[in-house]
Amino acid sequence: MDELYWQCQSGSHERQQVPSKYSWGELIIVWRSDPRIQGRLADSTKRSYRRTMDAIMERNLKKDVRKTTRQGVRAIHDSLAETPRKADWYVQTISLLWNYAKNKRDWPLGENPASGIDLFGKQREFLPWPEWLVNKLDTALENVRADAELIRATGQRPNAAIRMWFDHFHCETMMVLDEKAGEMIEVFCPIELRQFIADRSRVGAHVLAKNLTEPLGYDAIEKAFRAWRKGLGEKAQQFTLHGLRKLAIVQLAEAGCTGAEIQAVTNQSAEMVAYYRSRANRVRLSKAAQEQRT
Image (cartoon, rainbow, N blue to C red; front, side, top):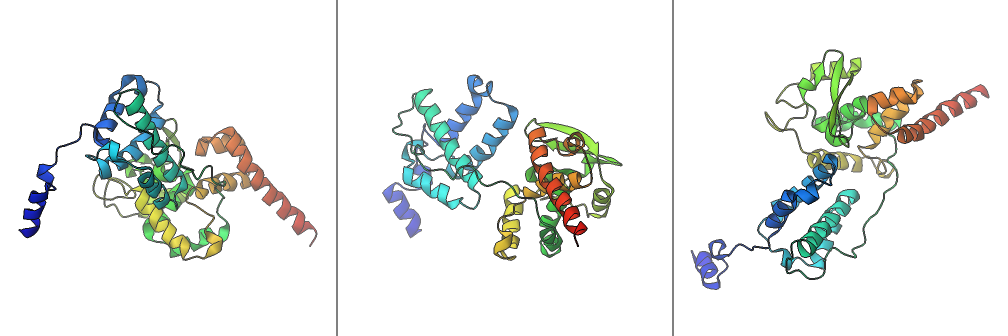
């Protein structure tokens, strides 16, 4: 009661707070409702912004945009350092919303607090997993193993693999998501993956289920993956979940698949497939060469 009394006396009780007309929640709603903005964005871009904006709204729904500081934005960026692409996207989204509010909606804002913050920038390429790391998956948490199996077998991005439904699998075929194009594609399902799905316990509609209707979140899987990877020592730190997608290309190339055949599985660009095929070819050809001289 004492605490409540002094909150009321000081005017800090939540019921005494006047909602700001310049809140982050209001700004995001207005941005999402602007047909001139939304009409210029691809569906994949809208989804990327939505994830970050949802995170901003979760923490700052009623907070006044005008009270955002450069130090605060930098602190958020630093806190996400282990996921540099996510960290940079967060800062870029704050900057985009700030400029929209100030220049298009005439909100009384000062200098953009996200402007000039050094981004992590483009990271090194996603390395295909070596065989020793794939073999270590037996020591990972079950959900990490399951996601790894789905990524490697389908060639999808990690988040798309996490969101797969049991209903996406139909006898010899499966539906996979091209996140950039925002479309589902029917492809052949390898026997090993069919068996994996058949053996998996069903606790919800999704293969990686949070509950009956929702999948696990990417952050939960990625956090568990990073914890497992940390326990494997320094040599494992350069590999990411996304590297399993690159491994899919390498394995298909080493099996003798053409670029078009690999694209039919992973739905990646011809340039990307060609790049990782060249890596696979070097390994295969150098192995054959070395074995001939022994």
